[in-house]
Image 1 (tube, rainbow, N blue to C red):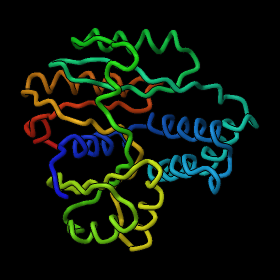
Image 2: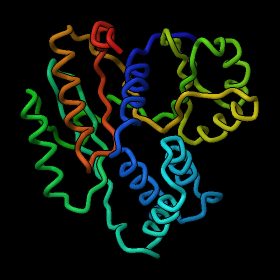
Image 3: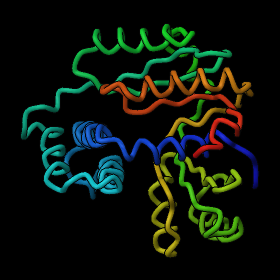
Image 4: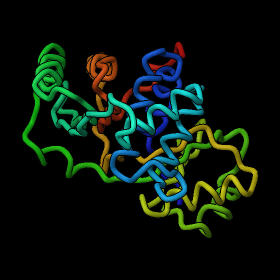
Length: 247
């Protein structure tokens, strides 16, 4: 069940960089607000909220901020008036991008997203023009120096994992969204610590790009993720390893 998906590895590396940014606290809190707003403030009954809290703890969001975010989501505190929206577009080299955002002002957000695409040689697309190229999956990343593929298969497949992908310096376990929490718990019960775990949009196919185009794609990616309203950016570029040689 091995395969190559450099995209997951790149997303993981970018995630580690983003975790060092102070504004990641804001994104983590928004995730909690949106989860509580959609499914209630009890994490035992709301798996999306449970995952959002878990991710917030991974970036050391203080306990009081987690509790306040839950209360904002349930309406106990003001400040939870966010709407989830997904934008679609094409970047340099025809690379497809999905942009998940949470905003209290759609007009402001769409104008800023459109500006980012235009600035870096891309353009926004109509709803559905890009999203069909991605599949919603649970994605759990393990350091390949800590675990073998056989070890991951033994636990993951029995718990309901769909695939285990060898990405070189890490293994990526993919699940159906509905099986994500159960698979993640199975690894935790087995004492197998993962590097990251999230529900993600995984591209069906990757588009190879050269180094100059790859740099343009990453510049667009960075500008989009720096936007306070943007929660996550997904793309289907197969970026050259040279872009990450200094990391």
